[in-house]
Image 1 (cartoon, rainbow, N blue to C red):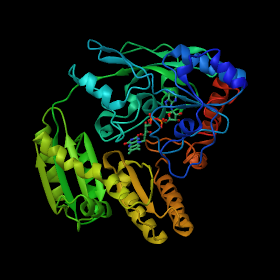
Image 2: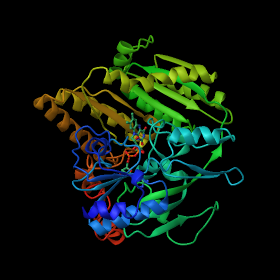
Image 3: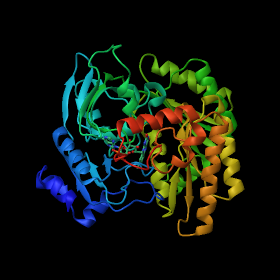
Image 4: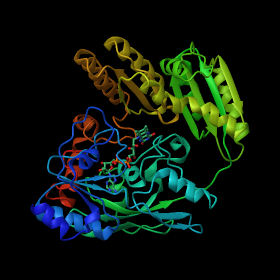
Amino acid sequence: MRLIDALTSRLPEDCLQFDDDVVEAYSHDRAIFEGHGTASVLVMPRTTEQVVAAVEAAREADVPIVPRGAGTGLTGAANAVDGCMVLSLHRMDQILEIDETNRTCRVQPGVINSDLKAAVAERGLFYPPDPASFEMSSIGGNVATNAGGLCCVKYGVTRDYVMGLTVVMANGEVMRTGRKTIKSTTGFDLTGLFVGSEGALGIITEITLKLVTAPPPPATAVAYFPELEPAGSAIVEIFRQGHEPSLMEIVDQASLRQVEAVFPMDLDVDAACLLLMQTSGESAPERIAAISAICEEHGASFVYHVEDPHEGDMLIEVRRKVWPAFEHLGKALLPEDVAVPRQHLPELLAGITEIAERHQVQLPTIGHAGDGNMHPLLVFDGNDPEETARAKAAFEDIISLALRLDGTIAGEHGVGTLKKPYVERELDPVQLKVQRSMRTLLDPEGRLNPGKAL
Ligand SMILES: Cc1cc2nc3c(=O)[nH]c(=O)nc-3n(C[C@H](O)[C@H](O)[C@H](O)COP(=O)(O)OP(=O)(O)OC[C@H]3O[C@@H](n4cnc5c(N)ncnc54)[C@H](O)[C@@H]3O)c2cc1C
């Protein structure tokens, strides 16, 4: 009752939803095994002031707040905890400004990534971060998870584009971080602190983003390899020679076979893997030819490159079809998200194969090869406890393998609850202490997204 009174006295009725079924639908993201609690209410503000009002109500009623974007996360980071207020930012979906002179834009957090891309493209500008979920995930969620994507290999991750934020703090104060200028040396980088903070440090209600000039259409190459190792060596050599692909994805044999079974497209299902590569900008055709030559020198069984962007798009389609092809099996899908320095990619790929054999699990692997960020996909019968236990054991072994190779447990999907048990294995103890102290400083009552991230 205290929470209902605190909310209804501050917010319009249409911002609040108490219906159990609706609240439940907004109480979890897309992580398959991460449990979620029962939320008390769903709050859907349209303005920063309404977010402040919601935070004040939560404080008055002493309930936790779980911020949420579009709920496409894969780690349980937006999952409700018992009694909480789910604060969904999806109605804050306005592009407030596109500044062509400074190549920036100002947006509310609920703007969907693909809508922003389309809006800035109309002005000849480009917003590069492109998680594969770009047609459904929100910019606020992308910032809060520091989302990556296919073109990070050249253009960087979400962090590289965030210039400033408006944040509602746990005590209801509103803080503006960052700058509108290209340069600034005033103060500590609090904008960076909030990027990837998974709703645990504050609620982001406005974002200023850097844009770049739209590049010309990319040139595309595909290369099949008879074994994984030479593909890994070709990737290392491409970067060693100074090429800057704008996309470099790998699709392994198991994935090729599943895509071919569900969406026949004449793929070479005997190849160990397929590399998909693009170059953009000046001399893209020459660069794709040079990259193709490196693949041939490293034993690719078939290499093909094109300048036509539509044909290029069709070639890249293989990568986009992998997840839907495995969904077709009706089994549980648990994607991993480890990343290693590029030179360790061959060892990571070999290690993943060994783990799959040892645990007798289906473990097709795709990933952002240019970033060393792999998404081995555990495919298993979630109703079979023995198979599920083997899949979980393989999941843990992949994490250990990535850490042994100087890698990270969470390349781009974030930590949430899924990766939280492993954070201490990656972060230096002093850093961990500093990070936890910062969280306590900003949110002494532990109100924001408790149990997530750290
Ligand atoms: C098919 C598919 C493909 C995917 N591909 C990729 C990929 O290529 N790269 C990648 O990085 N991720 C990928 N993801 C994961 C997911 O889409 C990203 O993590 C995305 O950034 C989440 O955005 P969201 O709006 O759905 O956020 P949510 O899932 O709703 O929330 C994610 C986190 O952000 C917090 N949050 C959300 N909005 C705010 C806010 N305004 N203020 C404070 N905290 C907030 C939440 O509390 C939570 O901790 C994929 C997911 C799917 C389902």
